[in-house]
Image (cartoon, rainbow, N blue to C red; front, side, top):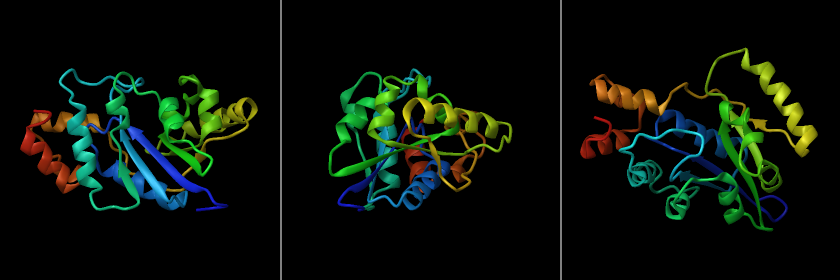
Length: 204
């Protein structure tokens, strides 16, 4: 808590499934922004990604709950799934905002570069402090990030801050593909997630 305000982090995504890269990013977010509480919020229908027709958001929610069970500093929320429809970040920020809290929003590089295209992007910048984490090693992106932050500063009066940590380059779609092909994948997710995927025969 700083100046009487709780520092609240918001980490949304598809999490299909949640993997080691997601967990590392959540931990880095907690430390880097000195958060009092982190919300992990699986989307119902993400507006920026295609989900397989067989997707069940409850499975994604349950996997996240298993990963962070017992954590007092991380809360897995079903607010976007309960709200239904497309999950727009601005609606989640409005639901969590308050005079007694400062909100921080975590995203990947791809989302950082298109944040001004999100629904009510000006309101997103007003309601929170956006933060991004690099999950890829492409050096060419650095110039694009710098240019984009200059645009954001001029347009919204804020930049998207970078977490000073390198997170494992890993995609949930690769894990789903490995499961479907019968290749090794268990080492890419927390053990409780591997058990859940096997128990429910997901992604086969």
